[in-house]
Image (cartoon, rainbow, N blue to C red; front, side, top):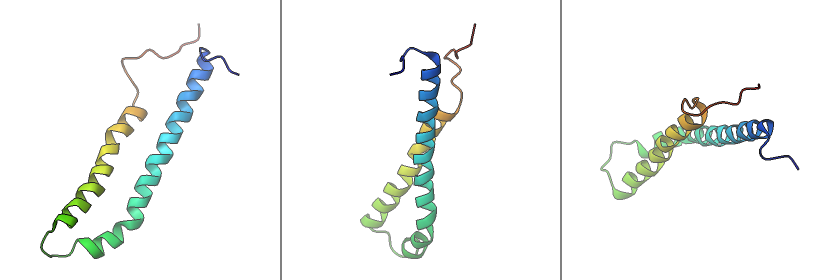
Length: 87
């Protein structure tokens, strides 16, 4: 078992965490891209708006927009935290 205070263990854990988050976000946007054609064909018609249609768009685009801050949090460097530097 690795020592959880070992800097190499911590850095590798962060790398695995970032890779898994990137994979999840990639799957989300890939699914969005695959279903965009059907969405345009079925929901973007010029008809009267209904509650169902409104909730569909709210659910779909809120989920996409909510992952933008998560991506920034995980992939932009944190300027307030000191990085491990070998002595």
